[in-house]
Structure formats: structure tokens, C-alpha cells
Image: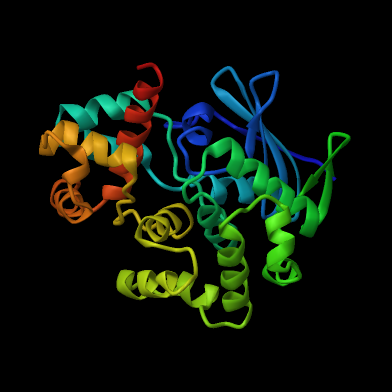
Length: 290
């Protein structure tokens, strides 16, 4: 049964900034400019109407509660932006460019598999692979006369063999997804303990046990599903922007992740993950026009 919720004139809330900043893979723009997404709880469409946002969803649970949690509406992004904007002109400009970014509270299990799939991959292909996995192993949900598929649970995805995953287009990631699914199903790594433990060292150590999870993927998982704003995922765009703005090495490939990490920890006031998102989105979008 469809539910509706109207979010009235929120601060720091821009659909393009939220859904196109690289943090999620199951939201797609519609012809009317709205976005439809499949999340753990069901299917949601969100459309801007003036300064308000209309959410319509077929979800398990209360739509308003789900929206407030998923879109991180209890976090004061205006305060965060004010804090970061005072660091330097680069943060100020990047925040003005992506002022409506919010870090979504994504399901931990889905986030782990999604970012393993993201390794050496592009966003359109990542989306297609995740959609195929969901259609093959996830539960069907009907929304506005169309069939959607939830991301499969650990138990559901554990039914897939390496060959099954390969046939869905995972490439070299097939074994990694298979092994990680098995490890989590057998509780070699506990999703519950990852959510409950406050120790960054513990969480990172546990995530790095999973096949296909390196430092960058672990940081993405921590930022995008565990609300660890104190991590700083580094990819080619982040290395480029950090070198261009702060390090100034003639050969950016010689800039080490350790050097970038140290700089981010010192400079970004305990919330480098949020600074990273503004800088990443700003630099990547500028690069598209280059």
C-alpha cells in the first residue's frame, strides 16, 4: 500500500546533489525530474514541488520515519557546512557547488556488496549489475504498475554460486562477492557488531577481512552506511583535488594515500568524510566539463 510524506522546505537538500555524488547506485531520475529508488524497506519516489519534497513509497514500515532516517534529516548540515566553509576558500566554493548533499544512511549489507562491485567499475555498469542481482535473488515489489526488486538478503544471495554471479556480469568480482557473502552468512564478520561497535580500528579491521574490501572500499562503507564522518575515502578524483589544492606535486600519481590521509585528518576538523564528499563532487563535475 502506497504512503505519502511531504518534507517542508528543508535546508541542505538537493536531489541531484544527493543522488549524483557517487554514494548510491539504486536511484534513477524519471522524465519528470523526480527520482525513484529501491532501498531495504521498499521503493520510494521523491519529487521537488516548489521548496517542498513529496515522497511516495511502497515500503515496510512508516514512510516518514524511513525517510527521516535514510536521508539523515536529524543531522544539522547547515552547521556542518558553516564549520567546513571557514577552513578555506576551496571548501567554501565546493560547499556552495554541492550545498544540497546529504550522506544517506544505507543498509550496511547492501553497501558492502555494492562497493565491492564498484571496484574498477563505472556507475552505469555498477547499477546494472546490482539490478540484475536484485532481480535474480531479491523480493519483488510492485510500485506504480512496475516491478522492482529489493537487494537480496545475505541468505538469499548465498544461493548464488560463483558461476551464477559471473553470468550476471560481475567479472573478476564474482569470487569476491561469493566469498564475502559466505563469510557474513557464517558470522566470520558480524554485521550486528559492526553497527554496534564505536571503535574505528575494530570496524576497519573487520571490514578488511572481507574479500574485495580494501582501504578505499572500507572507508566508503563506513561513511555511507555507518555514519563515520571521520574517514576519508581516496580515489582518483580525491587524490587529484587534494594535490591540486593543497599538495602541489607535479606528478599527482606520486602523492601517497598516507600523505593525503594525514592532511585530511589535520585539516578537516574531525569530519573529513563530509569534506571529501563536497570536494569529490565539485572536482568530478568540473572534470566532466573539461
